[in-house]
Amino acid sequence: MEKGDLIFIVLIILLLFLSSSLIFVNLILSDDSKEEKATFFGNISGSPVLNSIQFYPNMRFANPELKYWFEPSCNLKKIEEVTESLSLLSEETVLEFMPSNENSSDILIFCSEMPDEEVAISQGEKYFIAGEGGPTELINLTRSYLILKGKISLFRDDKCKTPHLALHELLHALGFDHNNNPESIMYPVTDCDQTLDSSIIDTINEIYKDPPLQDLAMEKISISEGAYRLYYSVSVANYGYLDSQNVSLTVFADNEKIGEYNLGEIKVGVRKIIDVKNLKIFQSVKNLKFIVLSEKGKEITLENNFAEITIHS
Ligand SMILES: [Zn+2]
Image (tube, rainbow, N blue to C red; front, side, top):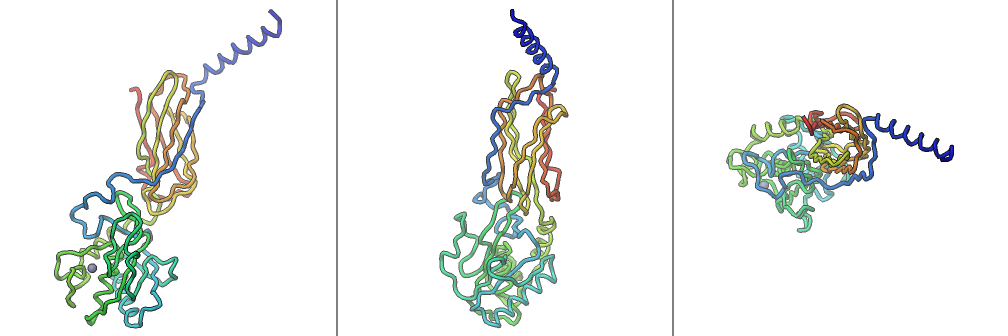
């Protein structure tokens, strides 16, 4: 045997010895990250939850400071009816309102009759009651529904001394459905004595309790093991009201960091799935921990950012 061959064999043996002394050898053959629009559980077309006075439970805009815009055809009387209704809402609830332009407004106020296509929304569901008002764009977040835009139409004239119609339609845009209380402003048949009842006020204050922040959550983890190989699939979603930036997922095996994945941006209502295949391990792993965090740290809650799985006890 040549001297060079001997050195080569010694080096190979040394290398094998060194690698065996390491607990983990990270050899990720396939690491795919894919994004999908989260459907979560509880599809929007599912049966409505009882005891909600809204179209669907916990419908809200991200921010309690809402921007509104009037269509130029609105006359002074209608503008006054809306602004009076908005000031009542801001007196009684946590909501605040400010005028803005058409594109950046949360609530659009029309005073002419709207064409039919305006009432249908993208998901094929009609929240917007024709000739009235309602959310026109929203995202199902399972625990809540994020309203992106609402519209009201005031083409009918209000016969009451204090604005009833405008308040009723604005509440539709805020996600409120008709109710069975004849004294409530949301009763389907108008009578000028109806008021903004306490169940509406309490619901608004309750659903806007969480700050308009992101909320990253570990959703689902599946793990399988092969001979010195580990496979895992992790899904991370944003259940909050704000898009998450620079999201990272860190994985620990028996308290040793074995992986860190940069997931980039996770928008509201979107989940990302990370499939890790053929992660080479040298000894049996007892426990895996997963932590998802965003660079812009503030979240509604951090309780759902961690997950732990025991493989062998
Ligand atoms: Zn109505």
